[in-house]
Length: 68
Image 1 (cartoon, rainbow, N blue to C red):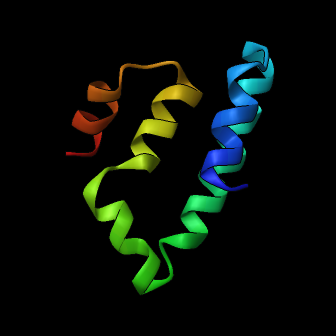
Image 2: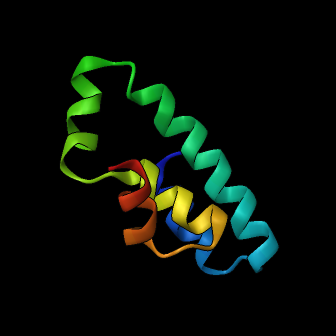
């Protein structure tokens, strides 16, 4: 799932559907991290932790501290 497709779809989705969309996007982003060129974008913002915070319904900062 492309990030912009995700944003458009998730805006109008129910909470239950949003959780599935977050999981799908996380899976796709994890694939991207294996590509050296594409992973550079992820170095600037921890999208994976942000998605985990949405999936687990936790504050983003809490997820970051847990990885620290």
